[in-house]
Image 1 (cartoon, rainbow, N blue to C red):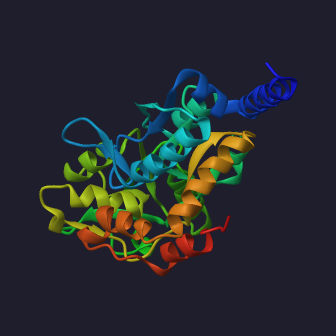
Image 2: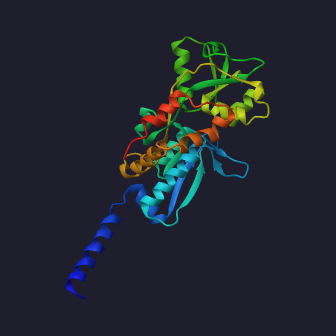
Image 3: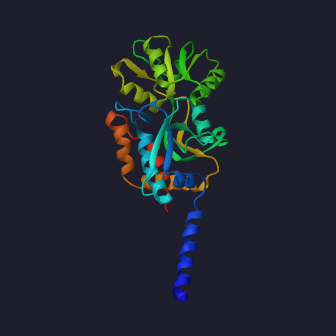
Length: 287
């Protein structure tokens, strides 16, 4: 082989090796194993839930499918498996990311500074607020009506913490019934064992819409917290986070994000609020 061709072959081989070496952390693990592992909340419609055929679906799952395509391209895989693992409580999801059992959490996790001590978050995917759902026959019309009420709330959520702080600051006599899932909260409300169930408004909308008699439920007219959502991933894995953020920013620059919103919220009568619209516009980061 002529010397110049031998040198070219060496350069190409080194370039290939350098390209392969550039994959680190989660991207390398996905490339080596051919699998992206996603965690999700199985009972939090319309953000994430299990459909009638047993498949994970929802607004956050739709976003993560776009992210998965970007991860597949970044790793150079021709085929990539996606596995889904359900987790109900926030602590379970945080621990699964920390322990490396999942690569990405695609549910309804609120970004907080204390959580960022343990995991990283993507660009924001949605903004909602804490609210209370009650029965129309005995409604909790406003947050100011919580005094003297028994309210179900999921353990370890930002809603749980915020309601405790709300009761203390406002000297309100609120009895919190701590539970482990959205389904349990709606069950207790239906059985009149609590006066209301508190969670993020986005989840309340989903729970009410999939109920048999949506008209029998009332949602507070105001909210008691600010809940910005993001996708959770391992802390400090900047290359992986860049791929995730790039995929989301690219999606936010197109009309497709509004079609996704319409599929999970708009067609059920939930309008695209100015705040959520701002999330899309302000995070449509250019390349």
